[in-house]
Structures are given as structure tokens and as C-alpha cells.
Image (cartoon, rainbow, N blue to C red; front, top):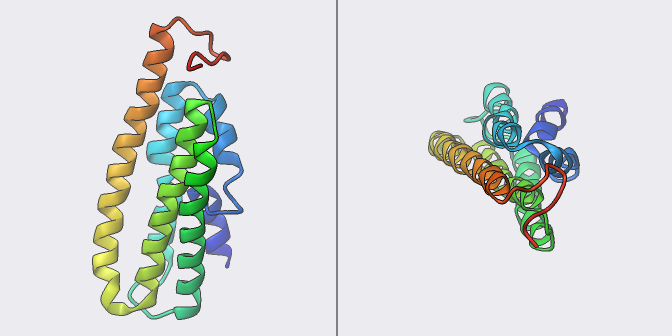
Length: 156
């Protein structure tokens, strides 16, 4: 339970995600790019290091899958009603990390699923890191090119 909560805060598990939109929304673009690309993956790395992937743990598997699916849906729904681009990207990260949480749950479901799940998680995390970092940097470039002040929104 401590592994789920401790690394779940970093990963943005639903219910533990409250700091992500707040931090991403006020952090300058280079910092937000680092948060979204590398730092959010620290929770995943912790799970992959300390959880018994490859050994059937069905009760924990169900929890991870349920939390992951809920985060994936929640991130999309709440992200659609936001107006600030960095906050939209934060909720997108919550949604994407929800899908990664589902993958961890599948790795805990059955020993045969562990190796394919680990491979898929690694590729998806790398993809998310590269794309999300680029999106945050692009948002910062747009803001700079438009002459926006750091605390103003130029997207209206």
C-alpha cells in the first residue's frame, strides 16, 4: 500500500494527482517540460523496481487497473474544460499515466503478462516523456513569440 501511495503521488494516480495541475500551471516551460517528461516517470520507475511484476497479485492488480482506468477517463474529461494550455497538458499527463498504471496492473495480474507489460510500459513512458516535453517547450515558445507576460494567458 505504501508503494502505491508513495510512488502514486509522483505518478499522478487519481486522488493523489492534485499537485500536478497546480505545479504544471505555474512552472515556466522548461521546468514544466522536465516535470512532465522525466520527473513524473520517477513513480513508474519506483513501481517497476519494487513491485513483484511477474508474480500473480490479483488483489493489487485490480486496484492498479481500476485506479488507472479512472485516471485515464478523469484526465480527459477534466482536461477538456480547462483553458490554460499547461493545465490541459497536466490533465493529459494524468490520463496518460493512468494508462501506464493499467499496464502495471496487468503486469501484476499474471506472470505471463509481466514481460510484455514491461516492454510496453517502457516504450509508452519514453513516448510520453518525449512528446510531453516537446509540447511544454512549444507552449513556452508560443508564449515568448506572442510577447506574453509569464502570468498571463495569450490563448484566448
